[in-house]
Image (cartoon, rainbow, N blue to C red):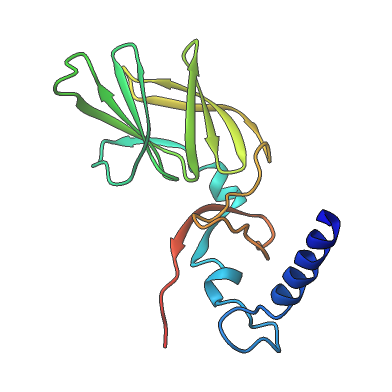
Length: 177
């Protein structure tokens, strides 16, 4: 009896679900709304040669889109998502003072060991030596294509990436009529 009931339920469920469709017209490939089939963001590309020269130490700037925060010794590092890292003197934690900004397009993460800064820069892993006292910066090693291409905030991978380019960010698409 249980098998007969389960079989009837299964046939009913398959019949009902077979007739389901998304948003009206179910005759074509346009069953899903556009937001289900394409990203609402567009990739920002940077030429590989420019990308590899883009890591520099520059004057401090305001924090706009903060990411991860690190405290190491007397310094505070705040990731500016996909742009780099703000460096603060944190000797007075109630009032950290900005010192530098480490520009690194596509940067999302940082680790520091024995005064070497390891940065996840888009698809590459780079080792950077920074002297915060004198303001010197040197990229000592770059391991290309360590990480997969950066995906959009809504979960889409980039496609048709121009040759010798790297995705360093995603920006919202503009609605053009």
